[in-house]
Length: 536
Image (cartoon, rainbow, N blue to C red; front, side):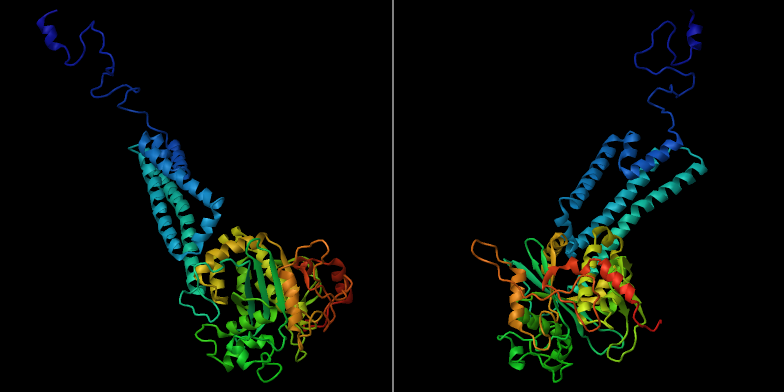
């Protein structure tokens, strides 16, 4: 070989006969390129695979980075995602109490809202940058357009749940601020850090007011006391007739000084139980001191004295907006055992517009549920009291977590407009836990109808004995017998209530008994025919 041969040999090519350097890439004959198996060029990822990995990265963040070879980043993102999933699973199962506490704390709700926004933004960033990491370059405009549409759809899929959670947090914060205002004053509630303390029972006065357009003031035609066992959630509902007279007040209350013989507003019709809320504060507006709802304080003191209970709190629901609450729950389901009038005026004899016919498991929207709870023409106040308790029971059954979450914004808006209470914000967490126990507890009912008391001349001592037996039944012991509650002859099953007449019943009974469907009673009502109405 001559020097000329050496001079013409390509620079950088191995000498003939010499073995290749171990690990060196083989020449392809093109400058600066390597083989397909080398590290310098990987086979482009198919576009379909890019789209699939982008979807997977949205569902399980971090997988796109792992697929692209960015293992540290992918592992970090995946670890954070798994921690968030674990926390959410814990809150939904063993941490439900913590979740409920967050839901009634406006400060924690605002932190939740901020956290949701941060997580949503980071999740969107992972989706976008994961796609960009996977997408080969260059790519056609068509592929870029398809990829952009997919990423936009995935971003929306991530953002919408975050938007719903944000709406929930905002609605819940607004509800708490409106209904449980921190500056609310009460003459009968002391705001304490531990509101229940060692109480075995919490007593809540439930009022249904008829305030609304065209009505003069508010009359509380529905008066029920819910006495709740704080340990088990077992609840006794004490229903009082709206025409109860001579409501007493505690001797140590200034109300006893002005009403020593019971509530009296000058005439019988204005001195009934349903008139106390309006007429008491009208006559003595400042007698109890600073309060935002003197009518409720009047009733808490009076009803508590009548039943021998300390009424802790009240909740007033304006029946004029009750229909919105039921609609927000998606309706309620009740049994109807006799014709229930829709409207009508017993005082003037104006006939009802129509009737709700007997039948089992009737699903009612808000308007129809209100008609069911209020109908009285041709019946009695006691019939209406039964249906109102059944309506409350149906609302409890309908208020499952899924329903509340799906329609929470509407539900919160309706509640904010129609509910007032003196439950302090500091007691909310305790009430949330107690409400969870009530859902699983036993609900019984005591109805003070005309088979138990005479509303015009009530025996309050006898009423207190009935209440005592209902809330603290004595344990049976040898040689002793439990004191019995007053009993009255019962009307045979299947007999429909006649106008102005109330079937006798035991004072203490399972609420489900009054609300159950009675096919014989319903059949008898249908056989008797629909009562007269404007509809004919």
